[in-house]
Length: 403
Image: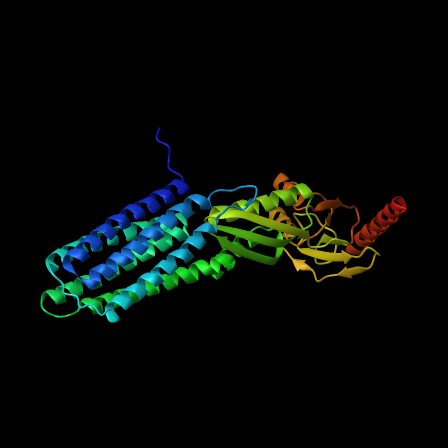
């Protein structure tokens, strides 16, 4: 059975392929620039040489970025971004060299054997077009900034090759377009360098994730009914990987259930957002003191069960026994629907004439940390008194034990 290559192996293969391509193009362009005397072709040779150096840096950075040590427990991911910034400086240097040769060189150049130069540039243009498109797809799939930077400047090499061919064809027919073609190449090179530089620098300065990605993460979090609110969410990028720091308000669940909920949120984020290295989630209960109680009633405020109630009245009780009755919530007399609602409105106790009959409803309420209080009291007022008296006795006993 053939082992499927890992993302890291694929990155290294693409970086190595770029190195081989740029080595070949650099040698070809340099040799034929000397043979033909073309300034544009020499500029292209300088450009390809900068690409060659950049490819070496890219290959090294891709290999280093996945390594983790005791000194660097979060990995050397940013080596990729450092490499992309360094690559951009090589591109700036290449643009400068091209312009300097085109407009400030005192040496008069005579282009010979333009057919050979055109043939070499056609080969370079086809090779760079094919490789840059394939590498760009691989960079997006593998989420590698180093490969993306490499694909972008190889694409710039393709565009500059096309410009050089136009200049060589014009020179072949007696028009002195060689140095102008070289200067246009310089503009392409500079623009490509600036894009790579700004992108790499943002990551080195811990730029946040894209707004669209943050919104997608929020939707994933809010899809979990246990989440009351997101206090903050921060994300940053390092190399190919993303790190998230999230603080949530959750319903008052048990510690075991809360841990399960947080694990589930983390798993979904990693499934739907590519290249997440780690998700740190800090959570707090939405309420740390007092009680919130839900009473299942009918229109006359008589206590009902899960199948016959059409209203839910919530009551907030403070530690001192002070009570606040909230506006009633109208519901359909259906066990599952009422159970779903109660598991999402952040209550501690639900008071009903009978427990729900369906196991699923009981289980979901238990997972949500909701205790079902079965009472024989007939009216809402009587049931409230029963709960408050029990709560006061519990607080008195608890304080006595603490003393």
